[in-house]
Length: 262
Image (cartoon, rainbow, N blue to C red; front, side, top):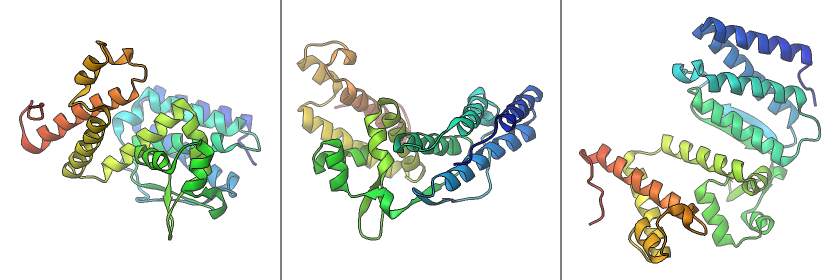
């Protein structure tokens, strides 16, 4: 696996710092595209046993200027260049998955549109194999996929890239993978479609906890705060869904407070 030399790394760091010191949007954009292009080519050449290709919905970027000028973008570029210089073979599925998620999230934040990964058939596993690897039922695995577990639709059925299993076991990257999947889904959904999905998710939580809302669950458990629950993750999700429902209804109908419980 060919990595970046330390001399090239130092020069790239200098170029990035210079672009931000001058606050030149054209220079920052040039450096951003250079780093992004390098990491994509690196992934295609270094991970041929996993990837068949990476394609884009649109080859031209309409940059998010605010993000491009941000410290987050600069830090991401520097971190990515250091990673390319230090990554050693063999790269684990977890390391590959982290890089894939970070690059894809970065692509969307800088203003990119669809980014698609095509995997080798031998790198994909069936839902049954994935469930066994995670030690869960098929029903639970389907729930994970709805939440954002990375998957692909093949000609016959859904399959899961091996890195997704390892990422799901990592607390930080499991959340990042879910957030990325949600962001991609929202890009392709109308407000009406998203509202329908939010209401379905809220209904499932209401049925599961036999309560109308989060506060009723807290009352039943005799606690005052979500964090006081033994497992607060569902309550946080429920609260976020309720807030999103309010925002969607405001957008579709107009006027605050239209989504309150009756």
